[in-house]
Image 1 (cartoon, rainbow, N blue to C red):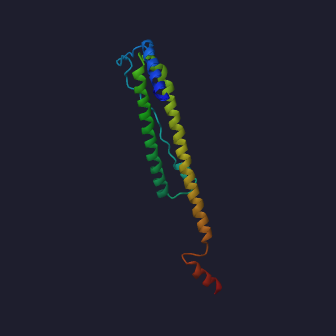
Image 2 (spheres, helix red, strand yellow):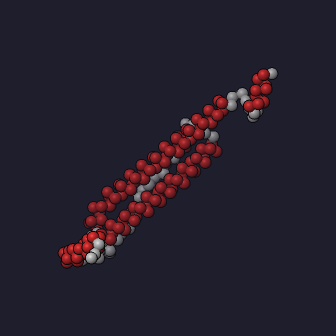
Image 3 (tube, rainbow, N blue to C red):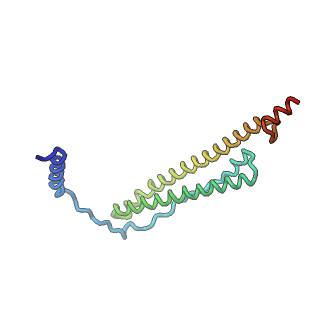
Length: 162
């Protein structure tokens, strides 16, 4: 006697064998019709130097933060361009004419550009929030150490008693 799982698998296999006669054979697309490479996404870079100026960062600190942001932006651009090209290749495998690709090119391009702009804005906000929090922590630490200088708590206590 077969287990219930084996009976279900055998019945499923028989049903799939019967249904296979109703499926259409996969037609290989005429790649020459829609194989033109997509135009690259036009992904602009942001300059956050004005945002950093609001924090009164030193020029050296601003330059380092801008470089970090630019490197992260470049990675975002590479990822979104790669994903767009991968989607394009997948569409080419399914389209049979250039007209089909032209129908999808705009929406696909808009999707990846929109995702990039959202990720870029999130990156900018995250970096600026991190800078703001770091400045707040430094300000609180300086306020807590006001008048202490580099003296230990014991030395400060001794000086206050004197």
